Length: 400
Image 1: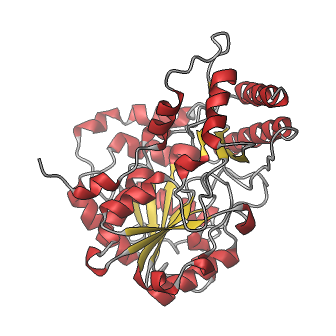
Image 2 (image 1 turned 135 degrees about the vertical axis):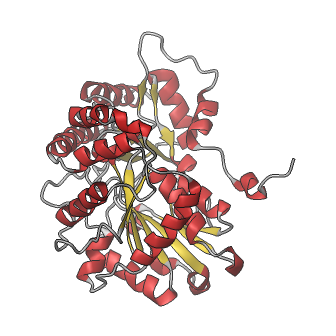
């Protein structure tokens, strides 16, 4: 049977690799598993989201439109303007916003719509990275080019290190700020540098901002791409697409709700693609999303909870591991004292704690593999569980 040959270029997903790594290991039976391996929020979804969803269940009898309701898009546009200090009405709900079923499917689908595979396209990707970027590039017929993020680059991509010939072929660049797994945040100046590159080489910036609301300095929310574009004079958001989600912001990963926003021409073309893709957001989910984007109280509570967990866990681990609290996000990106896969196996076997080897989130390059000898720890469990996991790891390492 003949199928798309690009499917053969896809790597197993990180959690499939982790399952293989720990298969056959018998962890301590008296210790329940504490999973720090997957970034799935465990905090309760705000009740206002479920209540809005339930009230709207009769609307399941109706087909939703791909564009979503005017009310939903207006709510999303107003949130963007409030959050990123954009002038009121600078984001037009009719032209600049499109609801999506979570950023995962949108980040993948956008590449399929945006890439011209007839021109030997390149997609630039930070390394380590969210695996969807690579899969999206490969199945769009593009060549991924990985730009390492390391301690030396403050965990941000060094765009100046990209060869000129690659910029000439680049059609799309994925950027994650705050970063997964490092939590690093692009400054206004760094966004502006990227905007200049996009103008010079006629490429699209796809900014994954799904961690934008989980930051640890209360008065310093991360700068966003549209914010930087507008302040740089790009009030039409040319070549800019941002991706936002309720999964992390509102602890609602199962709702599968988010939006893309930016360049009106790109939105229009992406709408055409999605009309055929058949991925309209159901009307009850739209109503639940309106409730979530309209409320900030639950976001403040969630942000405080993550800050407490990540700060406390880092303090416990600091005597045995080189731990730094990131600017944002709910991950600790930790350098391991030996091979990251073996380290993850040992923590599972001796501590019954799962972490994700860094090499599962990165690819080898001419300048090395930046994920090797690192692990990602997702502080998403309840506070007491995160503290217990950190204490188990510290005890294990202190005894090595």
